Image (cartoon, rainbow, N blue to C red; front, side, top):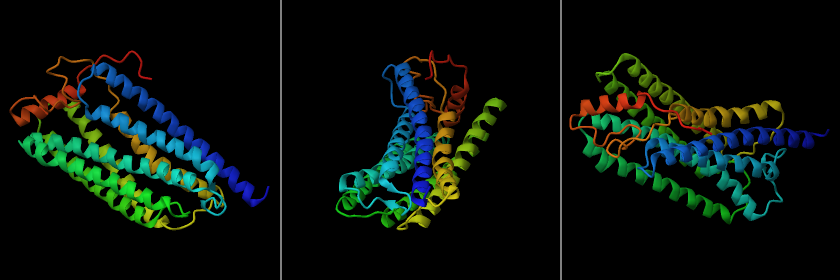
Length: 313
């Protein structure tokens, strides 16, 4: 087998394994999102529901990307095939960059979730509603606007490398920003949770969740920032099993593993509540006027016994 055929076979295997992995995650997350929406009987969009939908979108787009890349990527040259027409070439970058940006939104949603805990615990609920949530919406809107502009610029170019320079720089900055948000609000939420008068086992569970998500999210985002900067405007040939292992580690450890961790910690399917209780996974609104009591209630409600769903998948 010549070198070109060997690289193509290795590339097809890599795409098949990663594509199947992302497809399974998309299926599980999608089924769980439908289950959550059904048990909510049309209730408000909680952090748990939004995260499941975002994970579904991210994993489905990445699965489609690997299916598309298996036929469009020149594994020996390390670029998009020279025979690719403009439409498939643009689809390659859309399917690659969309899940990367959705992943930023997932991390921002987790950080915003913890920010809500911190603001409520410090009697700053109005600050959260008036400033934190609008700022999150503006940042995400600007991010996707820049992404669409990037796609528009690529539509008229015969660019062939995996990571365009401007995209890599913007994405690296966004991921570094997400890491700072996760660490900052994660530490603040853990500090406030230690001061809440709840049972010790519940406190330890919640602190472990915050610690694990903060560590995994921050390391993954910083790792992706460094990786994108390292490969921008460069060919990425698949010259042997080591290159395939590096690519699998990039997607598996820096993207898929944190997503699985988010699904794991937001896996609970709560039983339907009364309308006044059906506010959120951590029901901050209507939890009481006293901030410390509100944080205690949201922590207790998160870990109270629940009736399992009839079918998670």
